[in-house]
Length: 516
Figure 1 (spheres, one colour):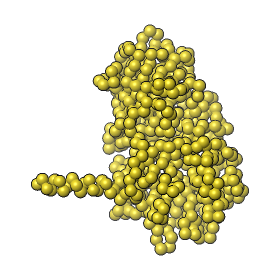
Figure 2: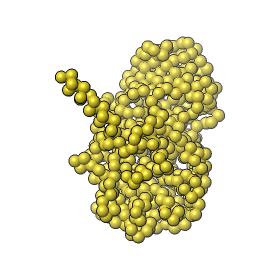
Figure 3: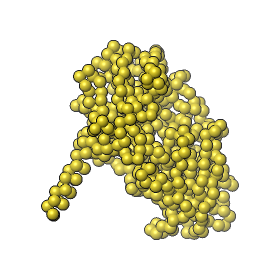
Figure 4: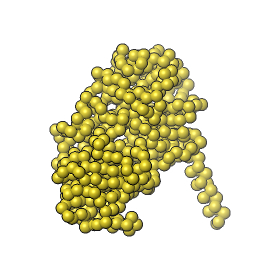
């Protein structure tokens, strides 16, 4: 009996050491683009209204990823006022599927995207992937859902569009369009298509295209980047590798140094967002790519594509000695209203009674399927009328935080905050205070435990502590909202501080911890 138990444990360990399990990151990281430089892989994702934008992650094994940088330092576009939460907002707009690549001949990284809510395409460049990234040009057309190819002759192309897919040739510096042609008109069978990625392999050109949701096709030309193109299916609702989530689609493919290929797609796991899954690719004798299915399904587990190499983990506690790339502000921040000073110092940047109009909410992606966020908050310098704390939000929100009213200070849980998209995103309910308790001492620990998968309770639970050890629940669970409104983002954690009477108050976030 003991021998069988030991043998079983050993086999389980061997399986875990030689296989990976999908998703590779249980976080909202959609519209993937991928490149490899040497032995490093880089992953670019959409960030919508969050700033800095166009997050970049790095891996050495395609399974373990770390946050590295952003291609868009600030949402500085022609409609910047709304991206500053001034004269409106840009919720569910901003940075959608975009292109990301590296040009070896000039040692330059490129990112470009059509900004939703603006309509132009902006190109950013950098000498290293960590930056500094600079806005290098504005293209006065929308290169929608774009993918970049740098061809063998060093010419640069961008595939873009929906239903009718176009290829644009760029200028020698990669900053303007010099030729733009439709290369594929969708068929009656396909209908609406989008989400282009562009590749070259063994003398053939490939366009990786999504038929949302959740099918995928590939276009192939053996003549040139402008076609003509044939097409084949890649995915047609092939499985649910993450229980409780949708089917893989969209995303990007990448090769290892020995020409083995892998595909990272996203799948819908709302209210948590769209999360990445990984599968190997093989090529048939005619040069068409295929996903390696198990029983015609995208599998939950596959062999590790490369030897594992650890990177900085997503979990842990951050004391804000630096401002890490895992964070993004809700819209552009007021840079005069925050600092790193023995923690993250947040000075009130907005006078409002509406959380969704408050500037300088610092966000962090939720780690699914269940995780806990805890902050230590120094509230000793809050002013009358201020609200500061830890929020769970999407287009609905709930928070636990410190409420300063006159000479009274209390910790409160507020629920049922809600936006709708009618006539532009606007708040229809500013929330109700569900429960509160008086506190003193100048410091409090606030905690959120969240489940973001349909197999778990899709709820957020709120608690607080005055000593950092013993936590007391407060208020009621926030039942996460996923009611069919077209909103592409998942829930996030956020830290906020805003004024309802006058600016001048300050809080310091001494630490921010994420744990599974």
